[in-house]
Length: 294
Image (cartoon, rainbow, N blue to C red; front, side):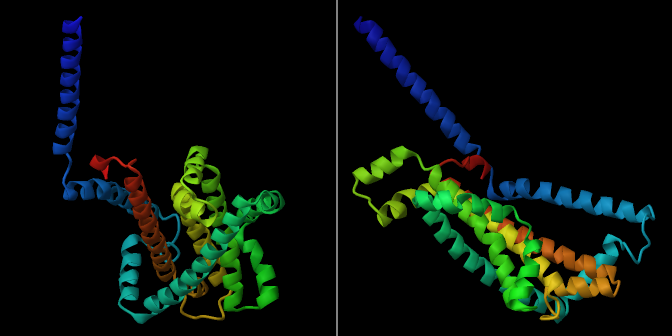
């Protein structure tokens, strides 16, 4: 019997040693930062090359005349010309200022409404489904009302941006709070967390991934609403990106139009990368990120 126990103990030590050795070996094979950067970059470069190649093929087919659908080289030259002048940067400054102001206000409204609805059963029964209905409503449908209320002004754009983004953020907060494990809530209460402290130290950290997802979706809605607003409410600004799209269409300047669209796309990709970095940081903090693939 003693021999069996000794053998069992020896076997357990050997198994643990084997697992430790396997973990150490895995750590030794962690790729370098340059390798990880390249592995994350080359698929994007490949997708970009495929998209540009397909674009050029469509141009070569003669489906549309060159003045209507210019090739990548022509648009690239126009984009470089725009980058070298003040017009593009002035337009980006105007558009990003509107986006920042509208989004920050939307975050404040969405967080407050989401927390209130998640905490109150009466509010959830009263306006819970209404928040989802507002989220599904196209932003463009709000502009007739916005123009009636605020005419062709910055306030009209701001109104639509907030209505486009705040419901998505609120829904993210509600979903995050709803999926907090009850065990964490009981543990927090047993440790003395009550009221705001329970939200600060237990609910908010646990719901953070869903909240970040809601913030990301809210940005997407606010950006789309802003672009629609700038296309419609043109007269209040001659430099915004949306206004430049409208002017290029009216002048039938396809290279300028496509170059501006590329700028709008790049801004969206940069913001998406920022949200992706925040999400990765949260997953790393939670210990659910594979370090070898980070």
